[in-house]
Length: 323
Image (cartoon, rainbow, N blue to C red; front, side, top):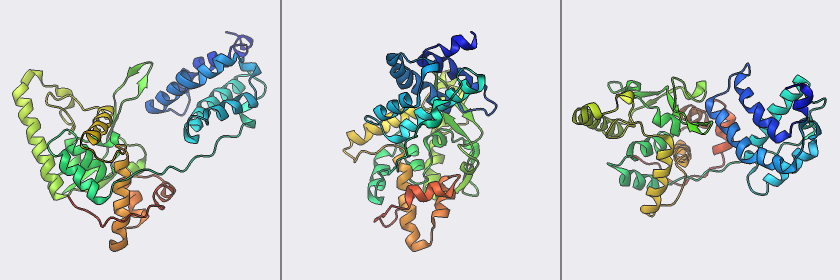
């Protein structure tokens, strides 16, 4: 297509055509990021501008601002900021390639990021949750989320090689995510975490160590029992089912939600177990000198401001807990 033909495309068609170009940028983007761009474009951005019938060359700052204002009526600012990211990339590329003479995004006011306040369990609530999940597929995810504050991708990415049972320590050095790309779910397993700071070592609690060793032994029993039917692709991984299939991140989230309702527990997101861990550490810090800087390292935040902005407001009243 010529530059003129591209400029005359509807913006909705142009941004869909531009989407794959994000994967060819000099700075490579993660599959999870691309998956987010794709979802934003196909489900929200393109449908909105398709109805408006606005061509790329005719797109104005007001058109984009109206889009943001409309979306803010139904979603939070952080979601609109994600829409802004892919719209901005597409228009910067259009300006760079000469499809448009002026980039309208430069005159648009991006929404201010809203302060996120996560829910969290008290020490008693977390202890009860851990007790109820004993012997279930949620036992280890709940322990690793609530006690250690691991992200879902870090929990699914746990491998037996990361555990040093002799020295009672384990390492967060591998993640598993499942972005949806071109309508298909892709399993992305990689030997690195979200950021360099996410690569960390944590002490292994004796009781948790016993739970993990018992789980490891049960896995060996299942492997011997099911023999050829056992999936050997994920042998190194902690979170697999009876047939050796990797337990997917979304499966943990859905099962967790159902489990809370079935057991009449206060509903929180699975990720809120990470916030629970932080709140309990903060409260423990009142007595044992644990600082926000310590919590930053424990949770694997790359920037101290992330820890401070997210958790400094917490006024935890629990008195610490143990398994």
